[in-house]
Length: 632
Ligand code: G6P
Image (tube, rainbow, N blue to C red; front, top):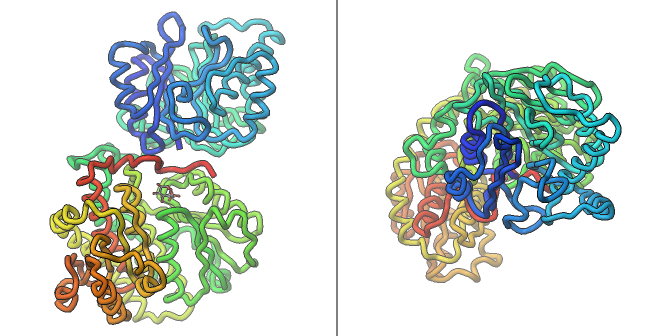
């Protein structure tokens, strides 16, 4: 949550800051702000409630000149969205602040720190936890001056900032909680600082300019080399140099990597919204998740991470825990069905927010998979750490390479789905279901699935991306259906077995982006309560492929029709039986049952998208949500 950026170089800082914040808006977008140093090293500020676009308009009139600056796009935690609460926050005298800070994360002991600082005479102008960091830095800076005398700014290199590094370490050691920080000091306009604990922070390395951002996407088009900061590291950046210092290890030589995000990964590519673009990217993202993982010779799936564990150890696994939040939790439910069907291993799916405080019976033969698109979700990270603490092998299934959860886990499986910018997860979900299916095959093959059965499963995986492609042909039909139902106030999504999670995910997509109340249920369970809601104004979306429970779901459809409820049915191509029962039909290609959630989710994503568009909603940035939830 919250996106932060920083720039120091030879160009107008606000150009990168605004462009970078726009790319980070998925992290939060209720208010935004930037601060720069002008030619006289005086701090210039622009802040606004609302989107980065509004900030851009303010900045066009030259409010924030300067070649060094920091910026922030906010998802409110402490204090409502307002100009006062939006970042940057300042430390020291309000008229001439000596510190400016942008922050992502939560400072848990901010009440105690604020009381202490207020008792010392600090005047706060916001309700945020971040402002305590700014005042604390300012206070510790003054202590440094008292100890060492005033350090004059000038042509110093980044290697000569020992006293300032002490100020940073002292300040950070007083903070409990999480932070990704970008900091400017009035007395040191020739440098920019960054710090990280628990919230991601990346440096972009340019020529004559350096950058800071919450993730590397803002660097596309600006810098080709990146450094990912680890917890307890701080960075000092000047125009031509940068230095990384670890709290315990002192100065370190960080690994500088090539930027792996492609230009077309962060642009709209001709689509009106990222969500639609990402829905349409699914044939490709599924291909990328599959790439190199199908082994026809051994009729199984390959995962680099599993090579580190002996087949003997893996055969002894007698319990699998799958955890995640939101859409990733729905993928975990799909994984539960797949894993139990193929591997016959008991699987438990638990919300990460619950797992982190539970004490489930586990032993050395249990295995955890933490499933996360962003790799930054606070609850998923905490659940993973808790399970690691208990001594069980804890792996991650993650989209973002090098993310906090990928690093914290004992090993990871990357989705390779490409950047997902729309707040509602689409292509990451289908890739998560696919990765879990591949794992199920792997575990099945080291246990009891035959070579022939393995080959049949592989073939189904292989055909999946083309089937996803065919499925996208329903787009215009779905648009018509969406128009018909866009004014509904409530929806039911119903499916059984593999498509129970599909129903949950369909309902979540609609809720998230159209603000229509929607519930997902196992189709038969609808009789035990939700059927009381059914009338002519409440559409039910059934996911009803020709599988083992097809006839049962037909009965459920009839039960809804008997009560006057409109039915939209997602069926396999050529299904004439349901055509006569349902009000609207969406046809999808046939696929094996364990892959149905992937194919059947695509029309549900499109339905949510088009309904939201008809209702005039901001599909990529729905109200109150953020893509990466780094608070508990
Ligand atoms: C937020 C997003 C959801 C996402 C969930 C888990 O709520 O809005 O789309 O499913 O976080 O995120 P993760 O990155 O861990 O998959």
